[in-house]
Image (cartoon, rainbow, N blue to C red; front, side, top):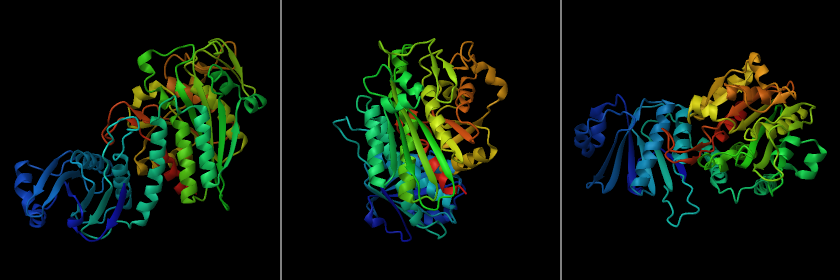
Length: 480
């Protein structure tokens, strides 16, 4: 879908005119411009609240008009909900081209326009590759502001680049697990390296064994597809900051020998969302020519039962010398991430940011609209929280208390990977922190936000969300 900003109100070129009605709208001015909407809007007692909507076919102008409650002017949360409502109405009415006419006085903050454009794009999506009947999408939306002051269209073109990468990530996460394997992910990374001139290092079984990547080797032992550690690097000339991004890439998680119940496996194709986000961010950084060196590491494996499967009670020795007892084979994400974090720390970046669909406990704590942020660096944490607020990919800061460390200590090894007796999201973060050395480190648990079982307040479709791409691109843009 293409979103453009224009200064002229020319409704005759569009199938539908969308009119956002903000709270506190001056009724006299509003109805003077759109008299045919006054009676039905007053009868419906519209006040500009989010969720209100009125569809009206104007005989005089021979066009569909949608009057939509827009909430508070300049409010980013209201912009997200407005975009979700507008796209639902446009698709419901099978509109191909629309004009959104903002009559309320400006100026509109740049962040408002960014947020609105993002969520219009995000809600013009559904994964229908395997459906005979395909979805109908909106092709073009023109934004017109009655009073000048909103930012120009150049930034919208940059947003479109980021949103294309979000859609790529959503397609990859929504794809069926028979298609998305470690092999397929390795090829996707290789394709990006070729397309954007990035450097890629691919480690499969031989290289993993040589370099002591024993977490990946253990978790992927029972799959017919070898595990992999991929390192994709974007290194522009003159970059003054270096960032390592690490993503969990369990392309299917059956739980290993601690087999999941059947209904808990339905969404486990999404357990590679962290690795997919890393790929999307590297692509966006290269396409936008961000002045930051970014290294992305993806730890890829399938966690399956079988005669070669690793077992509860096994002990893994990592490349940094630490040993880990396997208390539960369904706590596999932290085992493969440990390998990737060791390698990321060896590169001595300025910081490491890791994303993973790691714990069900974070879903219980924060639901599907906030990801958990675990970070001991106040500077890194503050920058990520600022990027989260601006992008709409929200984070909630969680503690990493040293007092809880004793819960992750094993009786037979240095650490154990599960059976922490409560606060499992926090203790999983403490486990990962053991493998990052002294590099400032942020762990983002996206288990609740990466894949929706049902629509939420700002996304109208279940499935993959691409959560993390916009957040991290915003973070990298602002990095100084």
